[in-house]
Amino acid sequence: MFELTNQPIDPAALEAKFRDGACGALVVFEGRVRNLNDGKPVERLEYEVFGSLAGKEGARILEEAMRNFAIARALCVHRTGVLEIGGIAVWVGVEAGHRGAAFDACRFVIDEVKARVPIWKKEHYADGRSEWVETVGPGRGN
Amino acid sequence: MNAAPLKLRLQYFAFLRERRGLSQEELVTSAATPAGLYAELSERHGFTLPAERVRVAVNGEFAELTHPLKSGDEVVFIPPVAGG
Image (cartoon, rainbow over all chains, first blue to last red; front, side, top):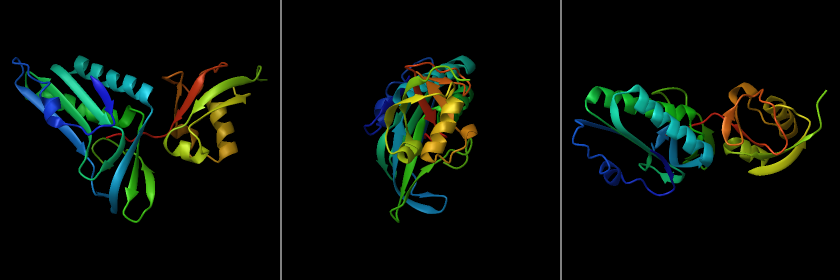
């Protein structure tokens, strides 16, 4: 399930949704707001979302993960609105029988979400300027 | 060479929204495809983002830039995304 929310993400509440006795692995990724990007001190982030299409594309990514990896369950929640440093911007949880598929699927979901879901991030810097930023590729940059 | 003008609904996000100065509008265009429409908007509003870096959604679903438009379509140009 893919969700967008303008409320703070509660990791404990999300993890509590994963209680499958047949699964030996739960892999969780939390994307947090960093205080520095590209050498510039960041004060806060703002996410803008094309809600209807973001929901559909996010759901498709989770369906692909279910199809392509030996996992039992996948969930992704992405924030909208303004976040302060340290805030959780995105949360991905994947439950599987074994750790390999859980790690692989979790990585797949976060990489695809960053590359495909119509969500935009504006960084507000300590010097008062702000800028829309761009994802530069899996595991690098933002 | 174009058929009758089309009446479209547009939504803008992120820096295209800021550049345009509004989040939605209706417009009448002689452009037949999103590619033609984006060229028209770029010229009118000074969008500096090249067309090859933009994706488009028509009626809430991703589409090709060559997708034939019809009156009443809702068109959204999607600048490079940056979730996470």
